[in-house]
Length: 58
Image (cartoon, rainbow, N blue to C red; front, side):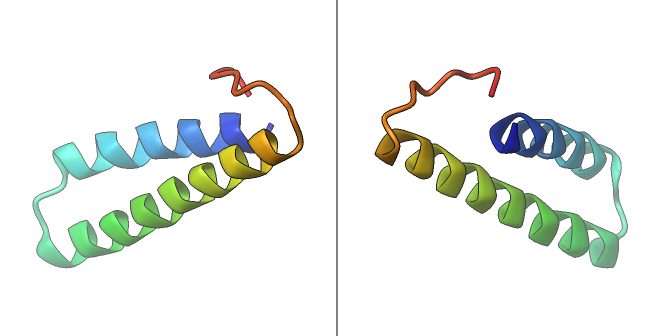
């Protein structure tokens, strides 16, 4: 579930970033995007450590 949410958030922030031109707002979105990417990486490592398959849907 965490991986699914992180992927959805990443897609959302990427869409926002593609449309945003204000430099300050872009920095905020870039920071949020970086955090979600880190969350996804952490969740995937935890899943691998627990022996669960890395299913792109989860």
